[in-house]
Picture 1 (cartoon, rainbow, N blue to C red):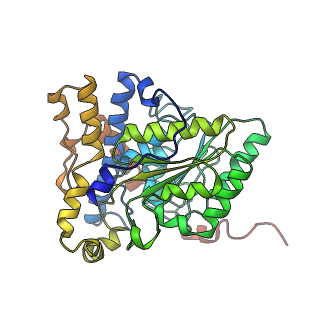
Picture 2: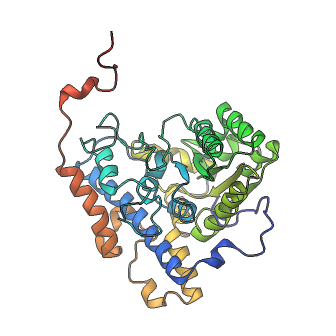
Picture 3: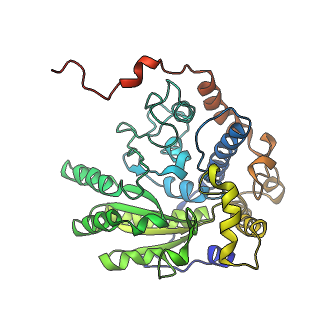
Length: 382
């Protein structure tokens, strides 16, 4: 399993002679690393808050999958759209962060809004109708997430279809687990996008488990990117633990789409550090070792963490001379369980940013009970 994560096969290539990452500056590389820390600390902080009994609801961890979010988001235009799923919570506040985290024109939710959603407070976009990822924003170009995985792909296709009719050049990224590729709506939507050459980039987060179902019981092929073959569109496999490889593959697909050539599928092979949700952590310890009886659950966790996205990025920055070996050891969040990390394992500006959102949410009011029927009925109508 570990070798599958570390050595993905390359899918259909766009023929580019220069990788998109080769155009990134030193400042870009350092910003990417900082965003990996940001996504990781958000996840870590929520896990700790839940364990302390200060947070209700189910948590769907993105721990060890941050390279997919950071690598795919970093090259987008502010006018591009995203369609995250439950394991992509950092994407809601990390969209359009490249030019600054708090600039007024940024097309991403604020950390305060997102934490308000997680804590079910009146400050949340949905006024505490639901927690976790069931949110979205037309203003921020984020398609509302639902529990029906792959169900937002046709919505994404419609969004960019309308944008094209209005003379725009927006691209939409849709995030999906590999299990969702078996849904009928996945194929119907991809086929529609292919027929109309819509700029839809479908990212498949292959963490090898569709809840408790392993890959070999989900699909007969090794790479889920081969789903693209039936629609005559590019299907590429990225190393989901390498943020710069994800950046390359997604940017190639984005430029392909923006040029009017149509949709693509980018499969990112990664590793799920915990259960499907925190309610599944104990059960995951029982069902995950069944793929290889010679490997214990603890050994599987260690194999997945050996290629932590933060450590993979640090290695690349050291090779480029953008980070010294000493600086690379300064903040050591990589390879650790969430409960093993401390605030000292993260850059202070990262800790302060997430703390700002958590403090705002925990101090915010709960919506009054009278709001329970808000948005259910249309007021003032006979």
